[in-house]
Figure 1 (cartoon, rainbow over the protein chains, first blue to last red):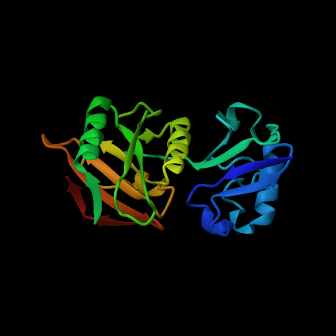
Figure 2: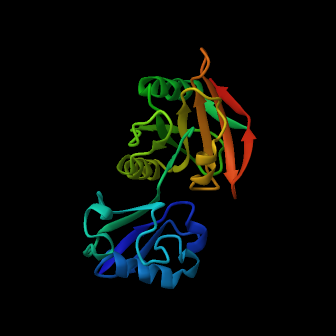
Length: 93
Length: 134
């Protein structure tokens, strides 16, 4: 089972400059674990030390935020598009 | 030097004014080489606050796909400061997600809005001059 993982520009240098990486896995957790195994520079960027999703990234399966699905347990199927995006926030505070 | 076409600068300021009393925000895209905005993506401020902003992540995803389809990448974010000068706050610096991005702030403090742009790398702020092009 293969999915396309789209990486934001900030993470591409850790993945040999690639914008999209094809990864196999049955769940988001499996896909991300394989991704980090292939590109160790991504370690700590997507999944935190506690093993949950880093709060500074948003991960989508197609058009759905995995935080509102089953987080890392969210199943993926062949041909799905996984997007990793940095959370963008700030303000005058 | 960061170039913003006049029409896009106008759209940016209009989006910020429409967002009052809250901060407004959005993303923009261009080629990674050119220091110029090609497309603006105004987004909702999910924080609905006059003090902080959060770009709607689904709008970010759609902007990212649209940019890619047109041969661009997201090159930065803009947001308004409603009552303070257009300078990055500690929150802006702490949460700056990408060192390659341009961080544009529109200040609505004065009668005439001001647009300034910054690079934020390893928490260090460097202002870059903005040229509004026609």
